[in-house]
Length: 116
Length: 114
Image 1 (spheres, helix red, strand yellow):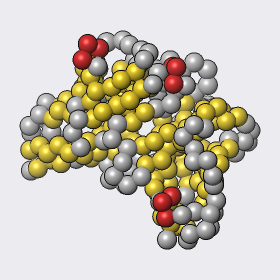
Image 2 (spheres, chains in turn cyan, blue; image 1 turned 90 degrees about the vertical axis):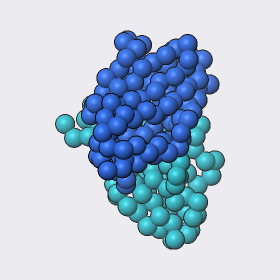
Image 3 (cartoon, one colour; image 1 turned 180 degrees about the vertical axis):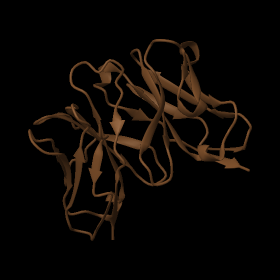
């Protein structure tokens, strides 16, 4: 059973370009979470999605950031017109459907975004 | 609301000596608590979790943690450090009321000296 997969692992963009980060949850998982880790900091929640629905986006910046989890295919975190401050590691996590009794989330290896 | 405070940003130990990483939490509801480890430029690996069962939780690689409700603490320990334990460790809290949103502490970086 493959774990959570993220690609690309490393992404370099110039200021003003778009960044697309992909996350494939574990098999059978329908809940996806995105977290951002700025240099020398802990992870901060960004958004929680289920298939075709955004459940909680309270941690998403109001502009330039969006996320989706379509019926088919991976979850996408999209950052438009990137700025240097967007440079960070972006982690995706997934959990199974239904009542997640112990709230455990399974993390992917992360995508490290560098904005030049 | 929920929050986590890791009391030490850096811990340095000698190989073979005990490790103690301190974590205090705050939550309005019954918490689930986790410790994750992150090796340099790697993803997060779950060490152990507390979910309202036994208060002393054993994890992988010889780590364990004790949930103390009266002290709102969930400290992580290991009796004998190994060089491979050098990494960053995160204490994490969540509750059902938080919608499964994980709240991370600031992390403790562990250095193991030979």
